[in-house]
Amino acid sequence: MRCEDAQREWLAGDEADAAAKAHVEGCAACQAFGESAQLVFNRAALPAVTATEKASLQPLAGDVMRAYERSQRRKSRFGRAAGLAIAASIGAAVASAALLPSVQRGAAHSAPLAEQQSTAEWVMPEVAFTDSSLGPDDELDFEVSWPTTEGDVP
Amino acid sequence: MTASQQPALRLVTSSAPSDESLCHEFLRGDVGAFGELVKRHQELVYRLVRRYARSNDEARELTQMAFLRALEAARRSLPTLSSRHEGDVPFRAWLLRVAINVGKNYARDHRRWGFLGLESVATFASNEPSASASFEEAEARALTRRAVLALPKRQREVFTLRIDGGLKFSEIAQALGINENNAKSHFHHAVQRVRDEVEKLSKREDR
Image 1 (cartoon, chains in turn cyan, orange):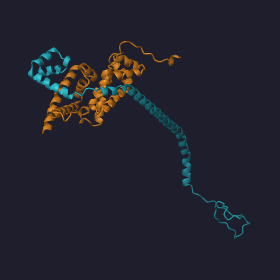
Image 2: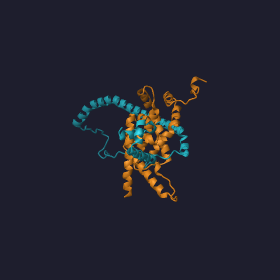
Image 3: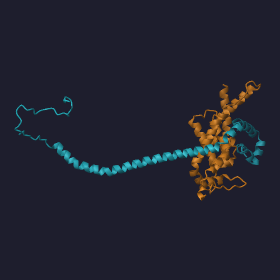
Image 4: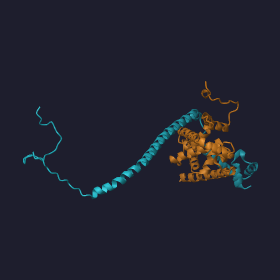
């Protein structure tokens, strides 16, 4: 058995096979490796969990369940809001689709008229004042304004 | 009282139900069964995640986070796991994987790989005659733990599951989805690497 294979197997502790253990016991290089590995384990290990830490974990199950319920409620609220938003946007899309053809039709009808308006020459109709009761000094041009009560005699 | 108003009855047997049967109860709608699973595995998860925490409170918070993640994912993941393992649910292995990921992501998000974690708060009395020796030992521990956090991902996972979780290699292999020999090889490399890294770091500190 190679040293590397023996060491790898030996690290399994109680699970290690007998051949590997025997090799390490009789091999100085593997024993040195074993000692350095043990030092690594001792130094890498975290301190044991204290009684205080264990006690702090007692209510954990309840805390987890409550946090889960909160997150589910939040998700369902978000889901409802998202559903409403989606429904509203679908409604808006349907309404636009329904209105679009009539708007387009209207545009189609009004387009020639607009063209006519833009191309037609506007002729001011001539108005003949034939009221013979008006004399030459009667005021014809005057400012038009909304009637006010200003100046009325009480 | 109608049938729907009757409280759910749970069969009480002399032996505790297995993880697998609790998982099946949970999947049938008994959320309380998951609470049992939390109580059963909370200490193990706590021991694993505190490697990534700076204080007891932070470690407890990470433990809760790990169980919450597991609970949120359970309805989706456990049936898939069960079908992959011919009806068995390797809940513990799956949970440990979730816990390691939570710890790792937490450390990444807080950029604490360089941080020594909970264990760095090595207390020693400076007025003791062996203060100098205690200081050196505390330094050595700090260097070793820093080297553990600097291990490549898979080696670190195997190492922490073995040292912090105290898992057998067969359990580590199951938790990480690798074979047992592979787990042993990763552990062997991790030990060598930590040892070499500590030597290197201590030489650098001596200069």
